[in-house]
Image (cartoon, each protein chain N blue to C red):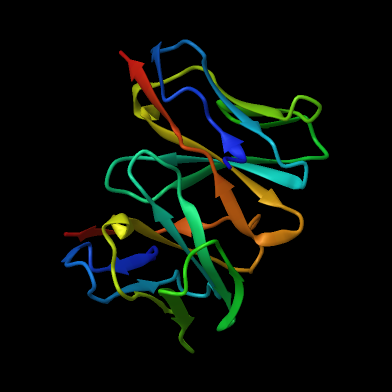
Length: 113
Length: 114
């Protein structure tokens, strides 16, 4: 039972364009969402997060949008840079068990020069 | 400042053996979480320890156990290894025990069970 779903295994964009990574969830108890970036041979690195009481959070080139009614969130990267090429994981926290994160399978983003 | 460190980097074990993985959190961090990442999947929560107490446990069999020491480092033990235990084992540390506190991941230990 996959509660956090990233349905696109990979995404390829041109440098300078927008990258949009999507994530869907099924558990209504999730109240906090995070995006992590992972390079090969490294652990995941925290990127940006959003609380369920908000619908948007922005940090430099990265913006996360949350649509609670659709149980959908997305990460926008503008403009995309070759250094952004990595696997991106969506993760969620349940208010009932606030010590653990549930991750999606990840999306491999490739930004072409 | 040193980040989260894990040892060993790679490990090859035979079915039925036992393995111990080690994690040192960032200095000052009191919480350590363990995750298993199987190829093609996202990290899956195994345990969290905060102030040397187990705070939570994921859906893993009793073959998996962990502990946290007074210096906040942690060990993950897996007994009676199965082929399906082959994975990248990630350790993450944070200041507090809540998952919303920024978690810093180590590079992981790659375990191969043959």
